[in-house]
Image 1 (cartoon, rainbow, N blue to C red):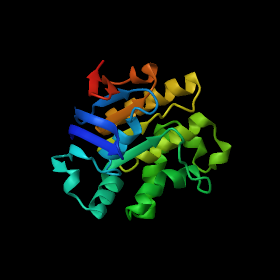
Image 2 (tube, rainbow, N blue to C red; image 1 turned 180 degrees about the horizontal axis):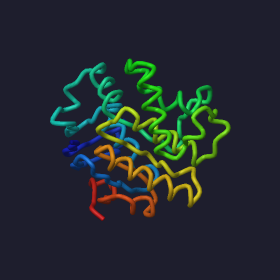
Image 3 (cartoon, rainbow, N blue to C red; image 1 turned 90 degrees about the horizontal axis):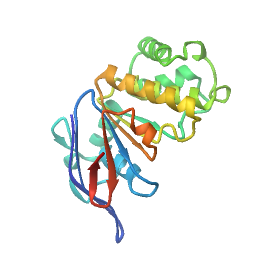
Image 4 (cartoon, one colour; image 1 turned 60 degrees about the vertical axis):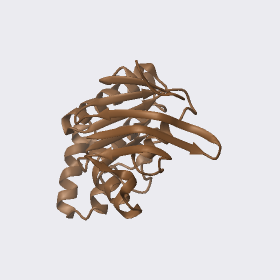
Length: 218
């Protein structure tokens, strides 16, 4: 599904990523751990085509992202990738249902189908009674559940999670990690979790540490 080969990335004279190689299959959930500043978020940006790699290749279903133009990469992210962030990025002026349905709206789905798909996934993440709530009415754990539903509503082939429990307490973090893993498996996505937390990484099928020499298996 997703293949990284000898990825390198520099910012000016500073090398952020070097010789990063990884394969992730459909339905597999992989953790990449490392301290702040080691390049975890940069790696996700390279995988998603938001940042160009200075060396190596990122292949999705056999296609080298480096050969795609900006429009093609944008459409790929919109249609095939799902993102979960530490800061939630739930839009404050939209209801829960509208936030979850937004990716489908941007892809031109019919309103009835958007409502059905959003409603079903909101129920799946345990938020059925909050569909019409505004973000300001939700707890941090609830906001992250909304973010997970939004990431998965379009049935992406790749799910990228960037410190998704960084703003949550221990119990909410445990629940969100279990939910995220279950949904990656249920949708048959290739899931990558980047985190500084060994406890969060323990929920994944494989674990790696990101260093200046690439990825080391844990």
